[in-house]
Amino acid sequence: MSTPASGATASSTTPLSSVAAEFVGVSQVYGSSVAVDNIDLQIEQGKLTTLLGPSGCGKTTSLRMLAGYLAPTSGEIRINGVDSTRLPPEKRNLGMVFQSYALFPHMTVADNVAYGLKLRKVAAKERDARVAECLDLVGLGHLADRKPKALSGGQQQRVALARAIAIRPSLLLLDEPLSNLDARLRVQMRTEIRRIQSETGLTVVLVTHDQDEALEMSDAMVLMRAGKIMQTGSPTDVFTAPANRFVADFLGYENFLDFDGRGLITVRPEHLRLQPAGVPVYAGTPSSANGFVLPATVTSVAYRGTDEIVTVTTADATPLKVSMHRGSSSAHLARLHPGDAVDISASAGDIVSLPAEAA
Amino acid sequence: MRNRPFLFTLAIVGYVIMIVPILFVVLSSFTAGSTLSFPPQGFSLQWFEKALAYEPFIDSLGSSLLLAILTTLIALGLGVPIALAIARSNLRGKAFVQSLFVSPLIVPELVIGLALYQQVMITLRLDSFIALMLGHIVILLPYAVRVTGATLALGDTSIEDAARGLGASPFHTFRTVTLPLMRPGIISAALLSFITSFNNVPLSLLLQSREFRTFPVTMLDYVQQSYDPMIAAMSTLIMAGTVVIAIIAERTVGFAKIFGGINK
Image (cartoon, rainbow over all chains, first blue to last red; front, side, top):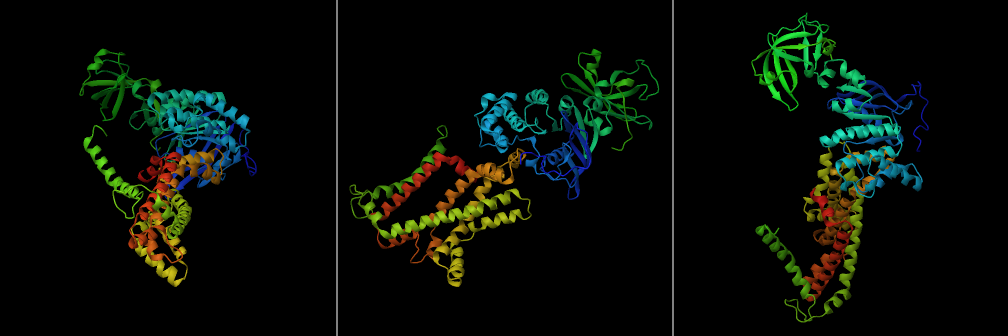
């Protein structure tokens, strides 16, 4: 029973060999609420794909359906080209790392990692070697005989990773793996997971609500909202060209402007410039092609250490946020006060056009 | 403790109140005299010899042990799956089922005994051992369900999910993960059930027969007829047995873990 593909029904279509897993029209409905709404998604072989979105967007539900803990209400889930929609988790050969790590508290670290290997009837000698190899991969070889309770959160998480990798899964699934770690460790583990992924060549699906984490770690990002996929693409693609207002907003584009119904545009706070009112600057027709200059009034200034966030209101009462890097630009800006008249400008290259308000 | 004199004093008073009366019983069981009195007159083991030779005690001790062991096993056999079902299912009316299994704690045991006496012994004409078994199982179920359930409620179901993901069948997951996680709860439920059954008087008073008599009732009968140090010797023996069980429990699982299952 250790070969997950055995006894599978012949699948109708043969997907590209580079697709490790695929959602085809998958929905998950609980009573009247739709957690996942008819999604289509391909997870590429050997890549790290993140499912990103706010809580309740359906990302964890999607991961649990992929892992087999939750049967989709409709649609098909294929793993390595085989319809696996009805396969129980134990027959999917996927390595899952839970948010709570879910280590077996009554077993040592080594026994935790060996658990899946024993089930696969791996001979004792090879089993020990693979346990040691996986623990070395996560840098915990010296803690093999400890119980999980004696480990720190970060160490427990590495054990969970080693345990999932030990079974040589066809996909490694990570459910908010870094959210229970402290800030410094979280950033450190991003590179660590990337390193493990490239050393093992595993296909990884990672669920997160942290856009920085997704941008830094992913090969492909899948942005979700209310059970639907909003945008899929590489971090650069998604970051530089958000598909709609939701994606832009989620990735930190805080300023949205619509000049006389000529279409919604957005600019990041760090791309807006602020000058004292009346200093002549280039002024063309405000649009995404020309850039813009707008008169505005300062409403508040918030100090944030590396930068200051200046909130202003334009003539038509649109609030805008400008991030001013300390030390950069003009020193007199430090003395901005609410009520001061300023000019806000952005150059064409920093302006992103968005489709009309629908998403 | 030391920098809290009030609490410290209270603890000492508490221990004194609990232990001193027991100490009186233990010391007077070693008396060489023939009356139950304190301080004991001389030292002898004669009352222990007499107690061990007194057939009703030995018979009823066997009966009580048998009853306690059997009913504990049955109550756990029923209680563990019930606790699992309550903790893990999404059934409606879960709270109702849960309170149903705790309700025997509220119903006076004499009422349970009377009901069983009428229905089981009079109407169905079954013997007193069966009636006692049923009665004890009813009063043990709350412990079996609640105490084992207390460990599950805390438990993270993702631990079981993890086992499934690693390739374990539902049964293998239960055997290698769920059951070991429930172990402290099961052990504490077993100890509580055993003690509750062994000490029970009201049910036994109503449901006993000439052929089947429990230990506490036999002691009660004896004290009513003759008040001599043999009863103290018997009590001391039982206490020694309890202490041995407690030491084993402490060495194998630890009290904190056993009774932690109740509080958390």
